[in-house]
Length: 169
Image (cartoon, rainbow, N blue to C red; front, side, top):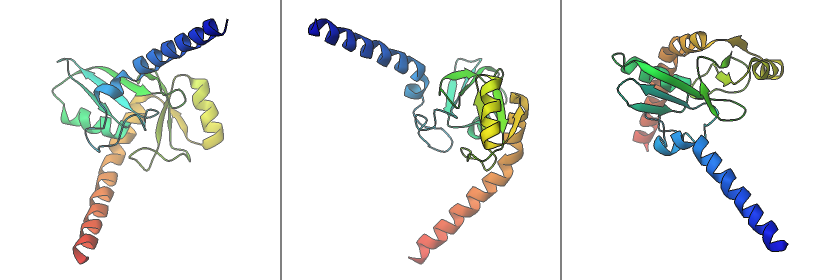
């Protein structure tokens, strides 16, 4: 009996591991963000995966870095844009997700957070607890582009200051 129970537990663990690996297959293929270098497994709740019509794909840590990629690849048409669900970390269609713009939970690579949820109910629960506004993908992406210059300038200025401090040493 103990042997059957142990075998059953091992089988259950194996099946669970395979399911988790399948859900995170994009992280295996695109381990770090092409634009900022952040590890996508640590940001599974905000990661994005863009598949283009030429068969290429890119994995980013956030909607901010996805906006950079979409701008840099203007001649490619995205056939699929997926985003990690804030709660479950599973990839979902970014255009069908319920997005929260703003709120008190710090964003990834942005000063104005943008989070995706698989359902409007989850997004509304998040808003009740953390603030923010319910928006669609178009508004979330527009906000990413609106924020991009200011945030790029902030990063550039911060890196310049760090270089100056290094030179003084």
